[in-house]
Image 1 (cartoon, one colour):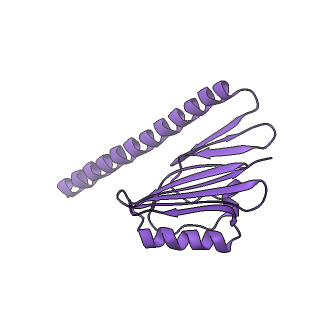
Image 2 (cartoon, helix red, strand yellow; image 1 turned 120 degrees about the vertical axis):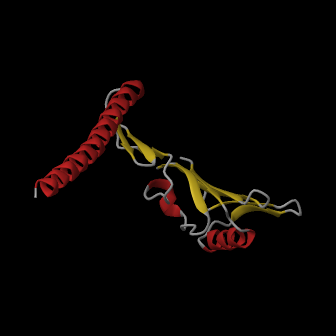
Length: 170
């Protein structure tokens, strides 16, 4: 009986120690996140709100303008709302704001890039197009939606990389 109690107590101590380590790690991560946010807010200036979340950093100015960096998910809001989501490959970097968006992807097949360019055209990005497809494995499509909005889609076949850039000029 005493051995069973000892084993149970030992298991409980080990479990609590492991749980405490995990809790301590999460607390340390939260503290580091808050300190980093504080430092970035000082650098960015008064009134700038900074949010560090898993995979990205968002800056929001006093006027409500917001810029998000570094996420690995398709962006929502801002300039990203003007373009269809690319659902192939892997997102490696995103910068998104009201006036512009840049999305970098890897592991993209040429056919998927070509299909995306067709979607962009169907979405209305056809003003003054520059459409080039070279035997060197590069695809480039640049066109306007209107007088202010421009998209550039660039694909590099050897590295299977795709860049999608949207810019809104006032």
